[in-house]
Every structure is written in structure tokens, then in C-alpha cells.
Image (cartoon, rainbow, N blue to C red; front, side, top):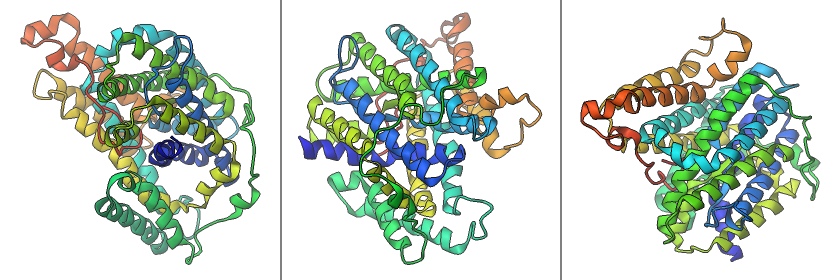
Amino acid sequence: MFTSGLQHVAAMYAGVVAPPMIVGPACGLSPTETSFLVGASLFTAGLATLLQTLGFWKIGARLPFVNGVSFAGVTPMVAIGKAQGPEHALPVIFGAIIVAGVLGFFLAPYFSRLVRFFPPVVTGTVITLIGVSLLPVAFNWSQGGEASSPDHGSLTQIAMAAATFVSVLVLRRVLRGFLRQISILLGLIAGTLLAIPVGLTDFSALGDAAPLGFPTPFHFGAPQFNAAALVSMCIVMLVCMTESTADMLALGRIVGRPADERTIEGGLRADTLGTALSPLFNSFATSAFAQNIGLVAMTKVRSRFVVATSGAILLLLGLCPVAASVISLVPLPVLGGAGIVLFGSVAASGIQTLATAALEKGENALIVAAAVGIGLIPIAAPDFYHAFPKDLLVVLDSGISTGALIAIVLNLAFNHLGGRSAATGHTEDEAGGGEPPPPGPADAPDATA
């Protein structure tokens, strides 16, 4: 049970530590503070996984379901950090996540009725934007991360990123089975070892870390509440709930226990309760990890208690700052090389979802075109909204938030309102309003269809 649980941890480890590694520096945190954030994310991933697998009362899907920090919130949180400044960034982020989690908890019983408003044409667009929005972060890491540094973008930095990128691809090609599942993690290890001789590995955070420690509640300050941040994170919460619903439907089929409305309701309650509790321990919104569903299908080990064991392992890792600090040994160019594959696989999963969205019917292609176009504005033209009020920038500077809003509104306008489906001869399901399909590639960090 322990070794099978450890497999699940290894398969999702790179995905669960990547969000704090992005958000921490964006909010002005030092390497040591970022390591603390990583440990907190591991701890809350373990807590959320135990809520899902073991459950209590009406909380938990009681399926072999691994939860961790969702990639959906990364870009909006970076936008919040940019708007609020280092002093208030994390308290405002945590305040917004608490409200979004509580709102999602009370919406859980009703959300199954709302799923038809998040068909593949919407979820595929959002997942694609998540991956595309994160790729610039990987490019910046590949250059060394700090633009003011004299060696930013040097041949050494980019060569190290390229070596890691190639290592991940080669390992993915030659390995089989479980090792193939963790090729990104192995690529990070290989890249870090290659970086030691050229002096890019920094051991300082590891030396400062204690062997044992508890994520101090509200370590970065009491939560603060900002209206624009609340809107942005509530959108993220809806996206996370949609992801988890699709994962529960897929996982129920894999384990031979189809997810009914009660199971989905319990799973969403566990997701949202984990999200609401995460800021208490200095972490972010949680949702299902699709690659672990692929691992269940591959190993045929369907016991929820095995996955509960992986949750316990994550809790222990979160209580061991030294283990979290090991991630700080990985140089940013190495993270960048692996991140191109990691974040690119999210975008690929979104494209795979869009392939099931019947883009040839109705105005689905127009919905995708408009939502992706608006969602790419903050990436292609970062100063596009510079004249807008500061509070609005929290939403507008997040391509995921704006793209999701456009996709949802246009889907309602074209596929649900005014009897359009009947007028065009298509049912709502044909027009893109049906049940979400199963998850995308099993090796995607946190992407579902």
C-alpha cells in the first residue's frame, strides 16, 4: 500500500509544487519563503486527498482521487500579486480563495445542474488558456528568472533549460510504465545534477530548513478581501469544480463505480472545503489531478485506501521543511526546460478537449475564437489595459479569467438562450452543451477535459 501510494505522489509531485514556485517569486518571496509555500502546498494536497478518499458526513467522493493545488488559479493569482504589491499580495489572494471555497461548498449540491453551462467548448478553451498563459513563465525561468541579473538570458542559462527539455523528451521516449509517468520529475533531477558543475545550484535554502515544522496558520498575514480578486478567484473555483466533475465521471467508469449525483456532490464539497481551508495553512485552491486517474487505469489498483496513503505521505512531506526545500535546489533554467513540457501538456489537453466540442456545429468555433483572442491579450500585449482602473486589472490581466468569462457568456448566448438550438436544428448537447468528456492526457499536470 505504501509503495503504491508513493507512486501517486511521484506522479503528481511536479504538478503540485509548480504553482507555489510560480506564485511565490511573483509575490516577492525569497527562496526560503517560497520553500515554505511549497511545503504548505504539499500539506494541503494531502489534507484535500484524505477528504476525498476517506471523507466524512456528506463530504468526499470516496474514490481513489488525488487532489492538489490547481493550475487554474496561477495566472489570476500572479495578476493579483502584481496589482497589490508584495506586502498585500498573499493576504489578498488567501482572502479571495477562502470566499471562493466557501461559495463553492454551498454551490456543490446545485452544481450538477450547472454543468451543462460548462461544456467542452468552454472547458477546452479555459484549459488551453491555462497552458498558454503559463508558458511565458517557463520561458522566463529558462532565461534565469530575474530580468535585472547580468546573466539573464545567457547562453549558459538557456543551454541548461534546453538540456533539461531534451532530457524530459528522451526519458519520455525510452522509459516504460511508472518511470514514464514521472519523466518530468526525473528530468528535473537530471537537469539539477547537470547544473551543479556550472554553479547554478543554490544550496542555501536547504541549509536553513528545519527537519520538522508545521505550516504556521496565516504565516504571511491575516486574509484581506478585495472585490476584483474575489471575482477572479470565484471564476477559478467554478473552473476547478468543472474539472473535478469531469474527473469524477471518468474515474467512476474506470473503477466500476459510476459517479452519481450524490458522489459528485460529495466530491465537490471535499474540493471546496479543501480550498477554503488551504489559505489557513498558506496554500491555494485545490482540485483533482488527472494524471493520477491515468495511473489508476494503468496499474489497475483501484483501492481508495492506497490513494489515502498517498495523502498521508503528502502530509508528512508538508511537515518536513527539508523535503520541501529540496525543490529549491532546482535552478530556474532547469525548471524552465521542464516547465515548457509541463505547461505545454496542459494546453495540449485543452486542445484535445476542444476536439470533442463539435466546432463545426453552430457558433462553437466563434466562441473559441473570441474567448482565446481576448484571453491572449495579457500575454501578447501586457500593457493593453494600462489605462483601466487598478482594481479591474486583477481580472483583466488574467487571460484565464477574461477568456473564461467570454466563453461562458457566448456559450449562453449562442447555445442556450432564445431557443437557438431548436432554430439551428441542433440539441444543446450537439451545440456543445453536453456532459464534459473524460480527462485528457494522463501525464498532464492538472488538466482535465
